[in-house]
Image (cartoon, rainbow, N blue to C red):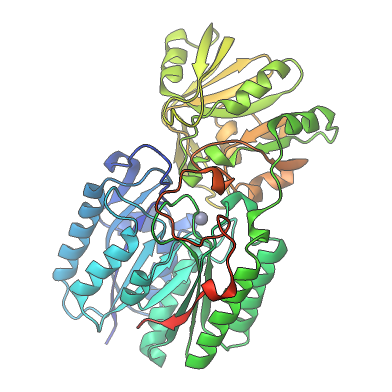
Length: 501
Ligand SMILES: [Zn+2]
């Protein structure tokens, strides 16, 4: 008899230092998941990986509510309650359910909880009982708590950063369910390492973290384990529990425990490396752009104000530094600022005005900058299709937008720009990033997959914001102690491998 699997999705990455709250308007909500499958089928998203893998096996799939939002502020609890009510009431109507497969981000906060995913998994577990298999897929930046492992049977996280395995993580989450029914329950061990690191500072494409991922993959390829996830928690979570975690799945209990502990020590040893090299001052990046003769732009990465890391994108700090070079450097940058957009619309294309940009949302994190005699070049609804590779072909929305220019500086202003790290972002208002001398990108690491081939150099700049790169400067209040890089830690601070179910 074919197995019955319920599947759903709730995805948002929350930033504690964003002073806003995300409400229903931040979310794309699809009450019947089938729509998402047909619409985004080609974009390779996680739910498609889940669907295809289980459908190919002849499993009966019951999709329910899909809710996703871009990274941002913690979520209003009424939004979480809506997801929970929809999910639990649907689950109640299904008889003889075999499994639940959930696609989540895993670093989700609300105004009442620092562990939204753990809470939801607990509620679902209580509803379906102990026998139903629960498999969850997460982002690599998930903060995977013990509560999650007490309630979910299987946890799968992205293995790449930049994230290029959105589809594959769905396949893995689904495969755990198939393996479970074909070969029996596997052991899942989790170890906890009190380390957080700024997301701009590492990648799985090169360097030490790649070596660690490769080592884990070699264990999987050798057949010793079924699967591995090494989570670097999104670091802008001010919660009592935040850590890196290693999660290993396999059929040999001792091997699973041993490899989990071994990789946890490797992660511990990487703690300094993961913090990245020193940041470059904005002036230093400008000097590099002035000297650069490669014909490709220098990219100034303002990751501290990255909306993909939950910041607002409303800082004009880099603009302030660039203004004196407006006749020398062709620059592109973006500032989220509603009233500036409204002013551009009032003026109309071709007209000139003074604009005050920046500090419009997170007023404590950056200050306004005045731009005199800027010309309105383009007015736009803000929609564009991502070039990717990460989200290639997906429709992105910046809200009402405009392009204004002062000298050779092109400033994208919008109500709510999100995917600033995609090449299609500037292209959507007629600015070709490849032809600029300096492009300011508000993103952490995923943008590199698109930008590296078209730029001469990517510089992680010293900027401030809700996704600030120097974590020790941010106003953490609840974080655990010790936690690296705030305190030095020792091997005995690792919470050793444990099997929770
Ligand atoms: Zn991520």
